[in-house]
Every structure is written in structure tokens, then in C-alpha cells.
Length: 130
Image (cartoon, rainbow, N blue to C red; front, side, top):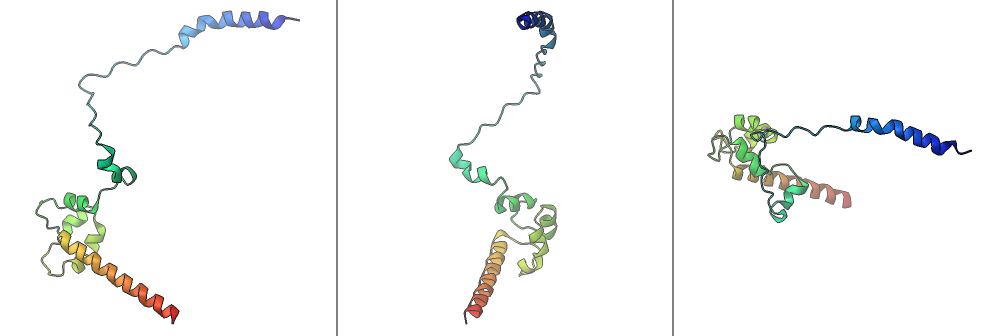
């Protein structure tokens, strides 16, 4: 009636020699030249806006697209710099037809577009109330 403890003991004696065979070898240490030190993490208050939104700001994208660094963004730079909205509306933004736009030009354009959208919204809202 007690064959289970005997079977358990017999099974354990068979498995014990297999345990060292199942152990994995330690991974080789990485070469010293391949290891690069991690960059220091800035304090949370300095990057809290980045913690939730990892995209670059518009000013950062403008600066990256402006390969000449002169603050003048051409249509080609806007296309190459992954700023499709600026490239698409370039003629409307470049009101002085200089062949480039500045941050001030872009901000002015978007401010004007926001005002037009707001005026259209107000007109629709008033028309619905009347």
C-alpha cells in the first residue's frame, strides 16, 4: 500500500544525475570595447514633458530640417526634413515670396488659420442659434 514513497525515491535517484546536464553555462563577458557607458539620466523635472510625449517639438523639427542653420527653411528643406504640412502650404506661408520661411512666418500663418477656423465656428454656432 505504500509503493508511492518507494517510487518517488527511485525516480529522484534517476533524476539527480541529470541535473548538472541541464545547467546552462554562463554567457561570455562582453568585450571591453563594445561596452559604452550609459548617458546620465536628466532629472524628471527637466524632461517631464518628454516622458508622456516622445516626439520632437516643432522648434526642434524646424531646427533639424534647417540644414543651413540660418533660420530660413526652404521648401526642399521642409520636404527633406519631414515637415509635409510646411511643404504643402509653403506658398501660403511665404507671403513675401522670398523662397524661404522663418519660424515667425509659420507661427503667423498658423495663428491666422486658427483665427479663421474660430470665426467660421462662431458663425456656424450663431446661425444654429438664430
